[in-house]
Length: 192
Image (cartoon, rainbow, N blue to C red; front, side, top):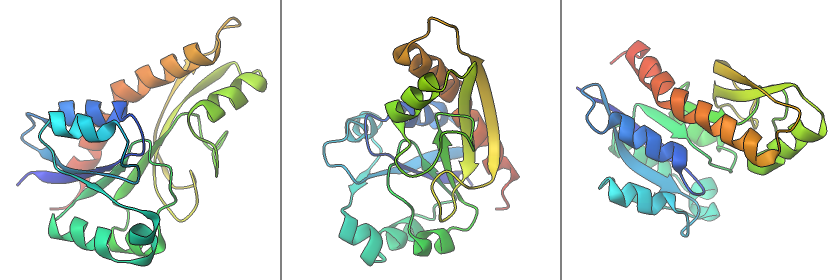
């Protein structure tokens, strides 16, 4: 039986799209739902393009009800993938899906992680610090931002004339190349 993936995203969803593409014709896994806290998120259009159902929720539903957990349980989700999702995962969801929630972060954690560190904010901090390399981290999610066990890291060199756009581009290339493959490897290791 195919493993079942739920993707959480807050924005454009380019990583979500790469994951949907990767598993579209897979025998081992499928993306069964995309969830977002942003009714304007472009990821909803991407999900629609793949004919994958979506669910939009607000702060109240996410933090004060069990609705999202019930939905995920009903769909028999094996893995929850955060692909540019900006809210902290509530303890109830972590408890319902232990070691089954992963995230991708645009730096080599533990550097440049934590609350408020996402997207261009991360790249600006890396540039301001004069780092010679950066990269991506895929990690398990726990009750703190960007703090769970690291599953995979890939790195790239920062050239002296790289600006934020170039750093972002290099990072996205790595995200798109590795995220879906890491998800697939993780699902293969999971017990049915």
